[in-house]
Figure 1 (cartoon, rainbow, N blue to C red):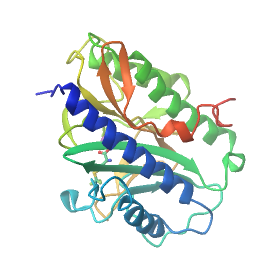
Figure 2 (cartoon, protein in one colour):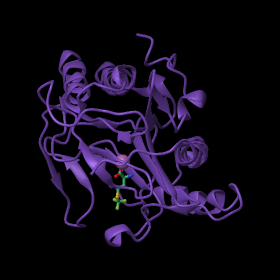
Figure 3 (spheres, rainbow, N blue to C red):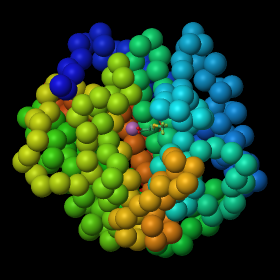
Figure 4 (cartoon, rainbow, N blue to C red):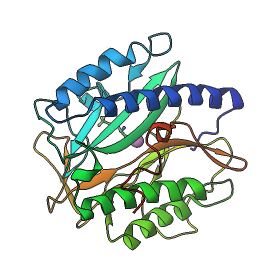
Length: 267
Ligand code: MF3
Ligand code: CO
């Protein structure tokens, strides 16, 4: 069943969404050469306590036994990388996936950032980042009541394919609200005109996971970290959005600090 939220519930989603975007941006600002991924997790834990009335909680810590407060996935790591001793290097691309709850509602958002700045990247990795972000923005612009969910999925897949990259098929976006993961699954591929129809008041996590090389992924022996099989870099961007009468509202507005006009987007 896909939940439809009331106006008051949507206000709570706005509140937690803005909080999670602030937390994500603060963690991204902490990324620099020489920092370990474990230090970013520690920073997350100190920063989250300063938000709102101090009761916001990580959505990943303890989730199915996941051991950290956020997911940090580097280079060929797609999702669910576990923070630890790894030292970030200039030229790494790092996906920070930050989700959490506040006053009973969840927000979920992800950015892939470049350690040491975009000028350290190869043209191929710049294209990967641009295409992944564009696929998310295209999806958001296409969301409105009455469209099929798979129209959005198809648009993501098409945008990624046109950019010469591959969508990861084993993991999807999802409904999000009083729980981190709700119906419906939101695949990043599919034929248009199928599946559920979007209605005003639905809240969704849209999250293209995109490989520079082939689509295949595997999970490392730690049981969590998902990597591209061919070892090529991979990117991930995510917003929590609400379906409103005139289109989608981005509830996790991290773009306010990572403008569309970033140098790797404007090529
Ligand atoms: N934020 C992730 C998502 O989009 C949460 C992953 S669950 C975890 O669904 F256990 F791996 F953290
Ligand atoms: Co998610």
